Image (cartoon, rainbow, N blue to C red; front, side, top):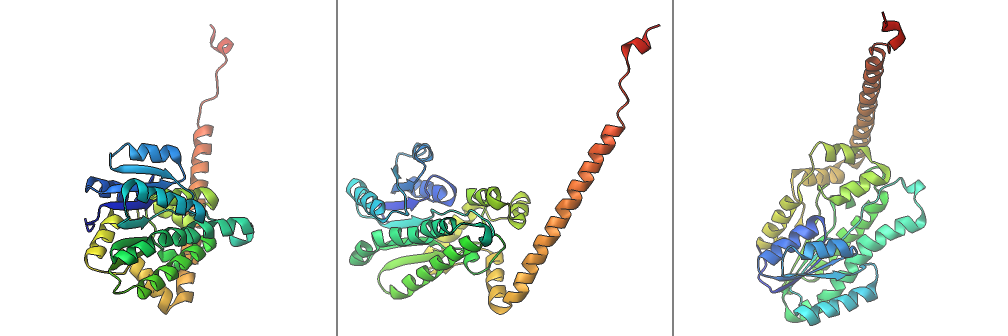
Length: 294
């Protein structure tokens, strides 16, 4: 692992890539503060290693973040790494979302990133040491139906992260902006349960998505190599270039794929209904007991 410090903070540490990152850091000997809004999941994760320390915190609340981070420093010491993995991915067509719904996604994904980064940045710059890992997304470049609000929030994170990197080159900090494609985490389930974007669901059910472990492996490798922006996997790189070179064509391909998936699903459902109907009609009629008496 590319971490040589003593204290790490991981947001979203009770599930998904946050949980995996926190456990790896703890098993490597670091003291790890895990932040999440779910106290039960926090306690369950913290029980997996004595080096894990749970802190319930709403990253949308700047004051709560500052108070929590002050307590972390008091309990564990100066923070040597921030892995900011917390985020949400509810989906819906923009016309069907309320203003409050759209702004909440931005508050968690973008504002939360700003709050967490600013909570550790000044101290790291003074010490000229520290790691900051932020999760943007390839979805901040490559747009999909039902994901407008999420993509907008991740586009903001992508820009914030890249700007932060450029401004702090030569500072002694290792800052990494991760822009993964779809990853098999609870966020995909949240998206499917929201408005059921068919391409996300089909990708999940087919097992096509990257595993969280593979992304965490790629992050550590990128840090070792001194990289600043990580687009893990060929799919992320291909989508990024397609968006840059032929955005209208990419939109057409995505919309055609969604339409094709919907048609295939309709045909499967139709065939299944016909099969059930045929099976029902083939059942022998019930025989009255009186008719069988001799």
